[in-house]
Image (tube, rainbow over all chains, first blue to last red; front, side, top):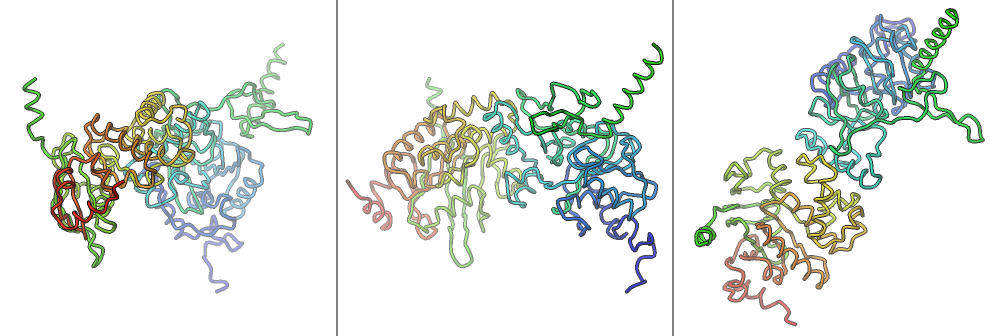
Length: 297
Length: 267
């Protein structure tokens, strides 16, 4: 069979963006279905990827299917562009699709992410692809797939509320901090993937298109642009996001999600933005401002 | 006053009408040609030996099994009599969650063992849209008191409860949505006699106070004597005798019923 592979070779034996065209068509059909039923988990024929499942194979397949030669790709892991997983996936697409890559949220057309939504607001035309370990929000409560499917079909989401009740009974507040379930478009209960609940409000009414890909579970779901996503709560215990006392130690931002970083073995620590692009942009802006102020005085 | 008395005397429309209900497992008969009606607030006991079809009948009635033949008509809130076998699955599930209660023999089947007592009772209200934590909790505690569980145990898991407490919690969990019909499968099975007596006392009080209709399946004649208004005796999947409880127990006609009544140990 050697020498008779796909004609659309990038020179190194791969089809554009690794997946064959038939697979991409199949995944695109899945994406269209997912967009038309916001929050509904659409099964798809997941492929083996050159990456262990659990490392973003679902997101990888969605990105490969929506990627075009003129796209500019950004990959983040825990908000950072320079972590192992982000670097590997970015380099992977640079190799197999030869697309432009960037670290700037603003300039990217496709952003593949794990555990965070970028701080900078997204625009129409951008696509955000999430990597998902467990697409079923009810799985930890109901182990049976046949039962959870029925619960979705009949919108029976009272059980999920019970877990929030248990939190308040035990801790006095809703203690769940990540993978916080939300009702999409007033209908389907969705797992937003393990993003902090800080990012849940960004899913709602976002101008960008958002896809979730679960490689091991072979499910894709989506939130189309400008669609509601209501994080579950109680009337007397409304949904609220995390907040911090201080600001980012590097850029001074008070509106971003902060990571706690331990700086030595004597207990020193600092809080910095988890979104590295946001942090550097913010720092550059602050530096430019001081420069301007310095010139005027 | 007299008007009220007359209204009470006038027969109310049946809550549940079962006709010719048949269910077989291959060649094995589960239950055959079972027909009866039950009116609001009435308690019906079903007794019979093991394998006589009691549990099959109960499972068919409560929508857990699909019968082969027959009809089950239930007087739904705001809709009048409906054959529940023609209802769509979501409608049937909703009915079972709100207007019905199912008390299992083993509390583990009816409770969430890893959810606190309060959460167990709150599940049904939350399933039908309650979203105020304070109210849900107050209602749960109100029900814990009704079933004589100390409210300091509200946040404890059922697995730390005794068998009798678990059974009472299961009852509270079912009654919180004020169902009009409750199915009970051996509600006192596996409990020691003194706990049984307390549970029966409690059940009798609640059923009378709330005007709940109940179908109680048991092999314990003492349970039906205390709780049931009417009694059905089953053998090999058929109803062989039915009537008022005292009448059936004191003057049994069918040889099997006579055997059943006479085999109860007298202390």
